[in-house]
Length: 467
Image 1 (cartoon, rainbow, N blue to C red):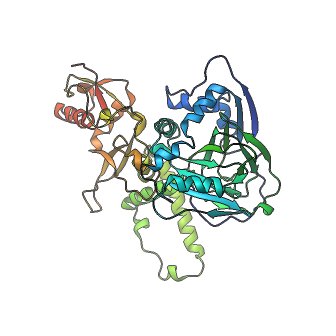
Image 2: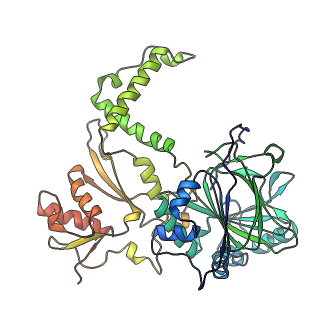
Image 3: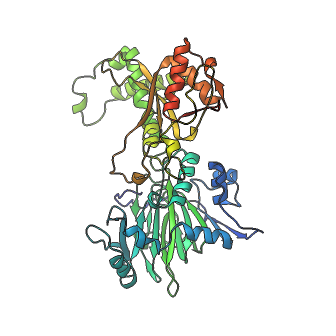
């Protein structure tokens, strides 16, 4: 998931305090993750730390290490992905670079050992055993159902894309040099043991991936060894490296990553452009031309700076008086690229409406709410400046799990659009446990039935009247 970028220069800022270590003893019966709700899943991932404590003391601030003595949870973690899974996965057609990287850290640098084209398991195992290479498997949730189940729930919980990689490293070897990522990182130790070294960040909450020379990062802020069932979190920008101790079996760990390009800065970039576009329709000064030769100046003039500052203050005042924030691109990008709802079987409930057609006397309720976003945008069928805004509803029910987080794979948006006059009725549906179609705030009965039918056809609502 991390993007390659130029290494960052060392800064002088001090990083967070060393991570907290929590030792957990097995309690009574078998331990498992809680899939009842997105919040329940996250709570079980970081147990016994409470979510309120986690976000107050650790999130984007400092690492958290949870070491567990829980055989049941360790067994469950081991089932998520094993070295032995690679043989069957390779038989399905995996490719170097796209699906699998083979690499090793040599003299503080990453050495890529990929071959060309299709991955053959015997060659992969040979490089693993003889060259002591680390196998990095990209986005295993595309193939492993339980990881799909976990990451889909986490995307609902965070409201942000959640990717993953599996790292399998032989004994006495290291795959990657010291580096930092542009994502929040959750580590689950699946097989064997992995020795970790964490360092204070040179770029807190980094927006880019970067490699650091070991002689420039000082001593580790914390060293520890993860065993199956253990959990580690650290914020983006945390410098880290990990190796499998010699004399032991191989190590397998899962890196779950989220919050890439999901900052306030990204949100501002997404919202301000729409706000400027809308304001310029009403404000003559924003539509006035720039002074002649402004773009040819070596430095921005004082007059231009004052004008821009004034416009920004005016936009801030306008923002204070609005209820709707235009965040169309970030919302749409998230929904278009996230996982579809986890389901067992052929997934017919995601593509085929169930129950009776909704009528005026029907009672309906929203379903898959965490997989739907509403946003406002210009009418895409018109290109003139007077085009009115429309309500766009995007959903991820028809997304392809096989392309999740693969970057260069083409994705398409799925959803509906309605005129602004439908906003109150849509909010009724969104904010109600169940609502009668005839009570929707629309002018005519035909509009009410049409809205319900459109949402039902996309599998976004259920008809609560049983056939």
